[in-house]
Length: 450
Image 1 (cartoon, rainbow, N blue to C red):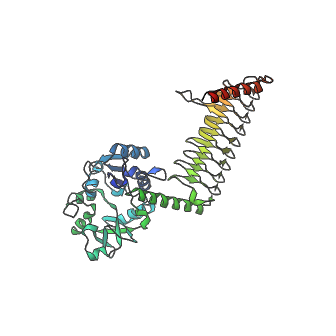
Image 2: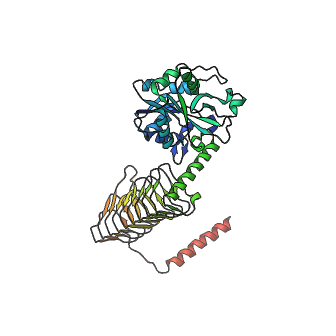
Image 3: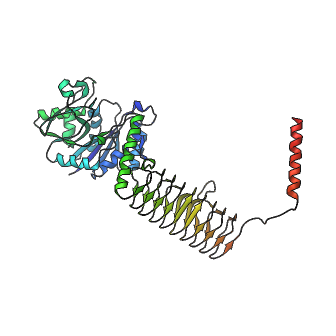
């Protein structure tokens, strides 16, 4: 079945008290909008239409960073959900298929639920996503007659009997695109809020003899975010589910509640994760790795058997190959650390290649930036870099080579060579005692004058 997504993302989010559009507030490292787009993307949609309003330029940038083919249309006035969906009409004028309406501030609707809706759409003209609410509160109610959805009643317009219904509306709707826009064209705003409700299309469809039904999902999937407190709740809910999935998949989390994951984190089984490890977007960890406490990973790949940390930082485009070791207070960025190599202490490795089984001494720095350009450092297999070596890129250290501790290496080093680049040590007998006497005398004079 041909599918298109219409994702509503125009709201200002007044309760967020923020200059940032509500749908761009992050959960697990990605904007809420991206979570909704990612779920919808599993359907392989022909079109993804994002309806923006407040902060449209920023919303457009975020949407197209995730999916460069996404189309963004602007709702200049927020006149209700039906009016918002109608902004996608021109973009889908030539589309013949089912449109699914999603919400950028409802990030947890699952791909499985969307598949259920698409299946239901094969036998009904309109499919609405509902849920049994523990506390129906101010949700719209789904009024059913068996499997048939008769109408949706907004809280503000519901009578006492309708308010007693616990089957509530998530707002997510699937409908043939041409029918959806035809029905919207007949929606009025004669209601308590004076808005054009998308939910009114159900009653309009029923008067035409068209069919409507509801698919249900767990209430947790329909969690909407309208405030910072709800954003924190959504983050906590995501992290709990993500940690549980890892545990089920055979990953050891020594202190699960202290590990924070991104939307797209991938970790293989038999990986061992110590407390207080943080994952930013774009991290893949293969099976059998060990991530030690207080490490921070983003945009990187860690291969089987590698050990990271404690207190390590892997930045974007760090590639840590099998059985390599990245130790305490080591930062790696845009670099390959090849199989069995070790960078164990207090080092910065950026824009570099570290060959297999090389050993990088404590305090080593690849000096990769000249103030304008980045430059590359290559360290060959089996090389030994002495502690506190400065490698001034671009520079190539040959296989099996060695640098003396404290060296500043500015030229290439051939394989198996020893490179020393430091000033000779000078010793002056008795000078330390004389210097201390001079300094103490100066200090005493300053104290007397004050």
